[in-house]
Image (tube, rainbow over all chains, first blue to last red; front, side, top):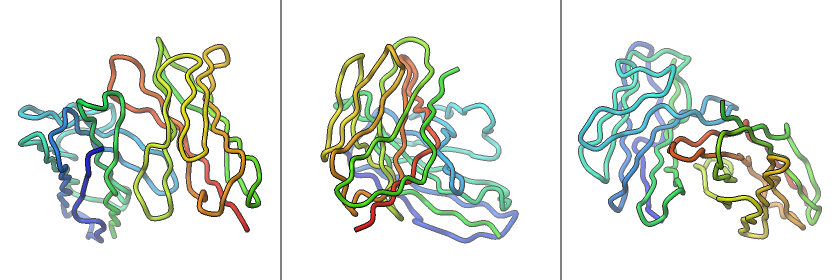
Length: 115
Length: 112
């Protein structure tokens, strides 16, 4: 399966600032996704990162708050904008490869704490 | 809408005990079903999957059978180890949609 890395692995940020999280895959993948895992809770899909076009957001998530880029088939970024303490979560990137259809593999996550 | 319900944790077992973590789902069509595991401080790992009724997924001694008649996908292991201590997530993916829908997760603690 693809090897997925995320940067940063963790960060502590001040209220009102923005943080950009990077997701890098070691091979070209068809689909990339961003999930949020709030403390002690399950995972919720934020959006699907589409290569060369705007991301597709799930209900409750908007582009102004979570802008996403995907310039090529191996890289994506998620920005958490104008942060508040409620944004403190683990943010995970996941990918689906053409060769392993119907299986999503997850990166190690970025643990964000907003003060 | 589609949803996944897991048994609440934490589940606490002694080493070599039998494990069952219940998972039931609600979905339209014929979903694919998954179990993911999250070890302390790590990301999610795909543990096993099943894509159609009566399929049995298995990996690392864990098994789960896709039961359409009871809309269930219970995770089992015959003899747990301390190293199995983790949070286990049941998830589904409904045909035509790439989105994974996760259950709340069940924390398993195995003691020597």
